Length: 418
Image 1: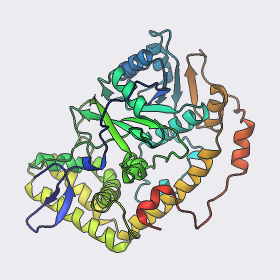
Image 2: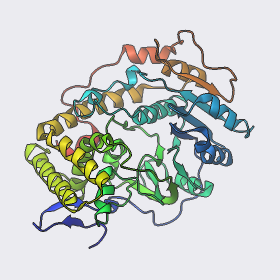
Image 3: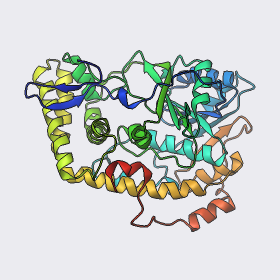
């Protein structure tokens, strides 16, 4: 069975796609080398995991932005960067509880995702806002467990990034090898003899062109798939070059499978629909999500029947318990509030103008007890502790912020028809 085929079981029912690679574009030829404005790293690990990103940014002559939490700190980034005196860098400490009006999304409060504690989406969205406010056009998102990214690969990626045209794409991803960054369920499927799922383009090594409209990363597992959805539908997500990822134990935390389940259902359902029908006529209603959930139940049951490892069994049981709580209406409501968030984000993002790094960071720092602090290559001391000065044009943006008209349709939701 080919890698792009749909897995079939004894019933003959299609319940899982082993690959979504047919939704991606492989450029027919190499692009002329281009320049990357910045590398944005959402960091949680110790500073030694940043060695590759620091060296890469220095070699490329672009700005390194490290968004820190947990074991990563701006001070440690400053120490690491001090060995590269010509490197331009910004290191931001993201506190627990950080909020900002531009990053307030209704979908974050959907009952099926409120228990997800990852700050990855917040960091990536901060990276998008900062890039927009500093006038950057091409950025590379690079997770702190990605390594072996060669400068010439990034230059080729930058050469392909641009407005939709022949051999130019709004997003270009590196193909991450050496360890599959799949969900716990896909790892479990592989452990019982399934092919598993190949690694789709992800936010872990993703070049983004900041054009007229850039979506956001929602707070849900598979947030990068939803970020890419509209461009996948248009067949304008390209992949070129390779990177490697550190291995991890997918069964280390039992709640991992539970926290991923809703995002897996949403993303796999939408991607499978794109594969079956790229035009996706009509709205994806209760009957569609009822089929998606039924197939998911069959898939998990098949893995549970074949599994013998206690860790795999525990993970699949956690996923099955969570799946039992998900209804078609949960999926429909999530899509609806996510669509509304996309409309508001599009309005706000389009109104942002270019600012100095100091003004951009002061504004994004927020207020109260959960403010960002930062260090930069141009500033030795931490970011200000005083109330931040809000740039006049950003204040006007917030003053004029409005909810989108009810009849507006987000571009990313063309998948749903209308």
